[in-house]
Image 1: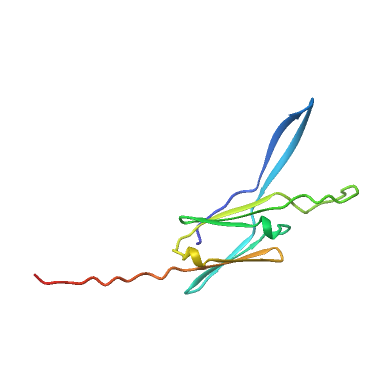
Image 2 (image 1 turned 45 degrees about the horizontal axis):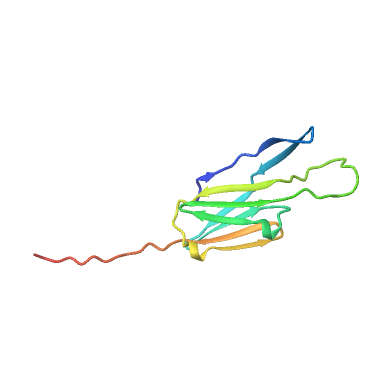
Length: 134
């Protein structure tokens, strides 16, 4: 799980023409901060997704790629914005799994802006092969 495919933060500008006006929309791709732990039986992943609502969190696994995503929306607060450090946009991060996991037993819990994943490691299957003499 140490081989992470990181999506760098980018700003994408799209131009739309609406009745003689050109509006610019910015879609930010943000990289969530992640901690990864493991023991004999599981891989544990903690991802910070501040401002993301539970309904907007997605976890997908395809082959050996684990992808975490979620999006935040800008808050409509009355008044003039004087200073801002709060970022809105889409969080997205993918990881290449270096160990086999039992996909049907993965658990995901989202609480207080932190996504906690538990990925059970697949136990190696030992198959005994009968040896015959000829």
